[in-house]
Structure formats: structure tokens, C-alpha cells
Image 1 (cartoon, rainbow, N blue to C red):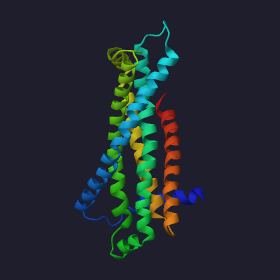
Image 2 (image 1 turned 90 degrees about the horizontal axis):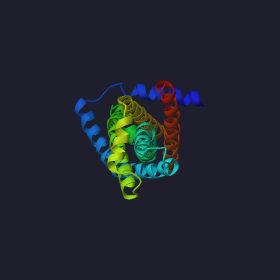
Image 3 (image 1 turned 120 degrees about the vertical axis):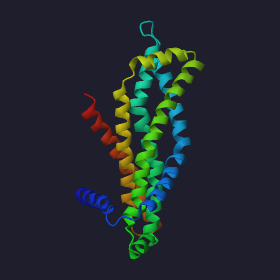
Image 4 (image 1 turned 180 degrees about the vertical axis):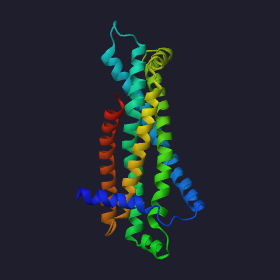
Amino acid sequence: MVFYHFGRYILFLKSMFFKPEKFHVYVQRTFLEMKNIGIGSLVIVAIIAVFQGAVSTLQIAYQLISPLVSKPTIGSIVSDSTMLEFAPTITCLVLAGKVGSHIASEIGTMRVSEQIDALEVMGINSAGFLALPKIVAGVIMIPLLIIISIFLGNVGGILAGHFSTILTPNEYIEGARSSFLTFNLWFSLIKSFTFAFIITTVSCYQGYYCSGGALEVGSSSTKAVVYSAVLVLFSDYLLAQLLLK
């Protein structure tokens, strides 16, 4: 069963490039999806990032407060943790629920209401017309959301340290700058592109091959979220194993 779905998933990705539509059609749909995925998710990503950075600062300070540990060390740990793990992974797990379920339910509804069959009758490559703009938009916008999440996570850490009088903004920034590595940012972006591709393609696949009625649309939406989250976590481990050596 696993190999069956994996093979059909690969064929689904391949079918998106058969009989492509006019370029301007893809551009228009891609910009629309970029708005839905990026701007539509900005508020929830911002809220998660700020509180994530704030809570991380308070918890790490609780564990590391000691005369032997300098306060900038807290900023160093929070900023590196936010960049390497919290911002890309936790944000993408949330986006798997928000974006993934929306994509799967939208395409699944079109499948059960025979709108996809109508597109095929008109000679339109339904897989490319429906899925490709969503995938391209996700791969563009989700990494941008991750960059915003990294920035706001550090802002949350600075604010938490300042208002709790644990460390000053200057001490936080000093620690963050002392441990900053360009590779860490590139690693975070690599994870972001990978997670974005997984979330969008798995969700499109689940919605495209949905069959039945409203109950099956809900089931395909749930599967899209669960499978995307599991694959995000698995690829997170795999990328860390391959690149962090």
C-alpha cells in the first residue's frame, strides 16, 4: 500500500507537466495562491513566532541562570534554536494544518463535485492547472514566512528578556551575534523549501485522488495534515543527519 501511494504520488507530480497551459494562466493563479498561502498565514505565523521566542527565553533563562553563565549565552541559545529548529519546523507543522487542510479540501471538493472531470473534458491538464500554482506559491511563500518567523522569534526573545529583567536587549543581541553562522540560516532555508514542497504536494495529492462525498473530503483533508506533519518531522531528522556534521 505504501509503495502504491508513493508510485501514484510520483506519477501525479509527473502529470502536472503534461499539456501545460499558457504561461500567463499559471502566473495569475500562482499570485492568487501566494496571497492565500503567504498573506493569509502571516498573522498566525507572527503570533506563534513571538510567543515561541519569548517562552524559549524564559525557559532557557530558568535553566541557565548561574553566576558561571553569562547572560548573552541565553540570547545565543535562543537565536540559534529559533533559526535551526523552532522557526522552520514548528511553523511548518502549523502550516501543514492550515495550508495543507485548505488545499486538500479545496481540490477534494472539486473532485467529488466533478469539476475536475469537467476540466479534463475541456482538454485542460487538471493536475497542472490546480496543483502546480499551489506548489510554486508554497515553495516561494513558506520560506519567506520562515524568515519572518526567525526575525519575530528573536524579537519575542528580546521583549521577554527585557520585561522580565532577565537580560537587556543589548545582551541578547550580543549573544545572538556572537554565535551567528551563515550556514545556520542556509540550513533553515533548505528545510523551509523542503517542508514547503512536502506540505503542498502531499495535500494536492490527497485532494486530487479524493473520491466519494463530503465525508471523504474531510478524511482526505485529515490525511493531508497527518501525512504532511509526519513527513516534515522525518525530513527534519534526515536533513539534520545529512547536513549537520
